Structures are given as structure tokens and as C-alpha cells.
Image (cartoon, rainbow, N blue to C red; front, side, top):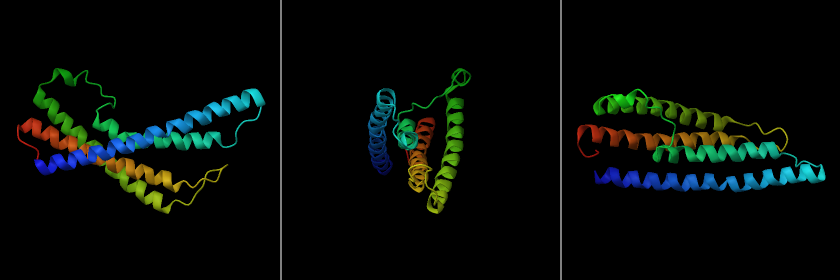
Length: 165
């Protein structure tokens, strides 16, 4: 149990740090969007590449926050039907959905890495390489996998009444 708890806390600390980096990307996004609006409105001169940079900054924000969102359980969940089931059945369904999510995230991490390492394209206007953003998909999926494994262990422990690992 102590081994699992130490790993769990380390992974969660890393997820909080990565999420903070992602949240920080909102500042340049906000400043760039404001500058674009002001430049377009008052000087009739849009800033070149604003859409591309905004897309990349938004992808950083979203991808780096995925694992943390899983950690604090803020992803959308509809429990209209499952809330009426027994706690044991709810736990079994949670394990099943966690395993499905884990399989999808493993595929995302694998393909994100494979595509990211082979990617040679650049953006249309500013010629920004796309490979770092493809690799960011792999990182986000990998960190989400770790968080899902933690959730799976905690759910199984709660269901069986035993300590984790």
C-alpha cells in the first residue's frame, strides 16, 4: 500500500504541474486575442498567424489539463440510470468504463507517439512544426493512463475493502 500511495502522490503532483503549465498557456492566448481584436478594430490591420497560434495554445491548454481533470473527477458524467443501481454494480460499471477509457488512452498514447515521431509537416502560415503538438497528445494520453490506473486501483480497493496493492 505504501508503494502505491507514494507513486500515486508523485503522479498526481506531476499532473498538477503539467496542468499548471497548460493553464499558463491561456495568458498568451488571451493577450494575443485581445491584441488581434484591438489591431483589427482600431488599425484595420489583423495580426498574421493569430488563428494558428491560438489553435496551438488552445491545444496545449486542453491536452495538458486532461489528466488533472481525470484526477479531480471533473469530466462530464451522466448518472441518471447508474445512480439507481446498487453500490456494487456501480463499482463494477466504473471498473468497466475505466478499463475502456484506459484502452482508448493507451491507443492515443501509442499513436500520438508514432505519428509525432514521423510528423514532418508545418503550419500553413507561420511554418510551425506540428510534431511537438502530436507528441503532446502522447504525453497527455500517457499521463491520463496513469491517472486511470490509479482510479482503477482505488475503485477495486474500495469495492473489495482491501488496501491498494
